[in-house]
Amino acid sequence: MEKSEEGEEYLFKIVVIGDSAVGKSNLLSRFARDEFDLHSKATVGVEFQTQVMELDGKEIKAQVWDTAGQERFRAVTSAYYRGAVGALVVYDISRRTTFDSIKRWLDELKIHCDTTVARMLVGNKCDLENIREVSIEEGKNLAVEEGLFFIETSALDSTNVTAAFEIVIREIYSNVSRRVL
Ligand code: GDP
Ligand code: MG
Image (cartoon, rainbow, N blue to C red; front, side):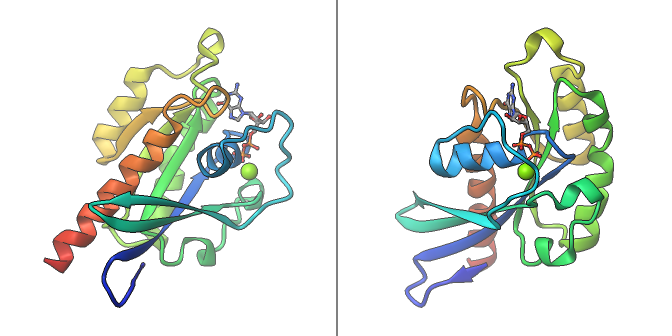
C-alpha cells in the first residue's frame, strides 16, 4: 500500500483467488473494463488491472491481481500475495468442489498475508440458479464462521461485481484511516 506525499492518493493491492474456472478473470475484467469473455482460457493473463475510484475526496487506485492460471497447478507464488491488503476468495455456486476448496485458499492467504487483509467470500455464477449446488445460506454461514464479507455475483450478467470490489476497497480504506488517525 502506498500513500502520496499529499496524503490523498492510495494504492491498494487486491488479489483474486479460488479454484480454476470459478470466474476470477471475468470478475476482474468485468470490474476493470466492463467486459465478459465466454471462452476465456486459463492460460494467458494480465498480471493486474487498475481501477480508480474516489472515496472521501481521496483518489483510490485498486490494483487487482489475477492468478493468470497459476492456480491450476496449485502453485500461486508468494510474490502474488506480497503486499496485498484485500482479497476476493471466489467459488462457483454451481460446483460444490470449488466451495469445498475455500478453506484451503483461506489457509494459504493466512500464510502469505497479515491478519488485517480485507476478505470477501464471493459465490460467483449466481446466474446459474438452475444448476446451483451451494446454497446462499451455506455461503453466509461459512463467511460468518471465518469472519469474511459475503456476496454472490455474476460476472456474466454483472450482478454485484462492482459491489464486491467496492465493499473490499471501503473496508481497506477504513482500516487505513483508522491506522493513520
Ligand atoms: P478463472 O479460471 O477463475 O479465471 O475463470 P474464468 O474467468 O476464466 O471463467 C471460467 C469460465 O466460467 C469461462 O468459460 C467463463 O465464461 C465462465 N464464467 C465466468 N463467470 C461466470 C458467471 O458469472 N456466470 C457464468 N454462467 N459463467 C461464468
Ligand atoms: Mg483466470
